[in-house]
Length: 294
Image (cartoon, rainbow, N blue to C red; front, side, top):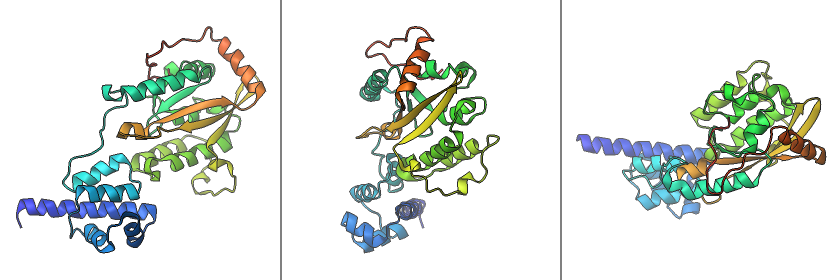
């Protein structure tokens, strides 16, 4: 067998493995996938076994039916011998300027409450002025290394964890949210490593990863967080927004996290807390905030 033919066969086998993996992740049979795509079950079987080389359009039809994330679709296309379809520009690349400006506007409009933009692994890439001013009322953010990770900020005993009143419930909700909001609704190796690193902090509940709960709160589109400051409990809830029509890998993987006061008392106390830090830093229209949370 020639080297070129061997390489082509290896790519077809790899593509078949990828297709089977995502079909298993989505819990779809070949018959169900055939009905969703209009592609015969026989043809799907041949693709999975490496006996058939699908066209580019066929691959994209299948990927769309299985809701495969853009990054993984590129992997499919390259295994099939095609050029990637989805750009891997960084979130702050010039080509992403329209998205960055839209995010900037969202963040500024949320003042005086904290709002941040995170990548798929919860690393902070943008924030509004209220975010560092709020968290610096509890800890010294400058002492934390960059890129700053929102989950480590919450779970670290040297971070916000000692100030979170409802830690047991909040930590469960956050871990479950990582699993639920993983890109493509599947846990890659780096996401699993992130969870392991959070559970490695001291004094966590060792039984949590395997625990099941009937508490309906993890299914809500928000996470309740209560912080104690100067003997007063400040109650917030956090909501996450995603880019509705992502056209690139970076936009599909971004998450916008916004904190809201959960009651009138917290809203009033929050305004007082922000006033104690001096006049709010104004971000000029069209100017992107510093991506660091510090």
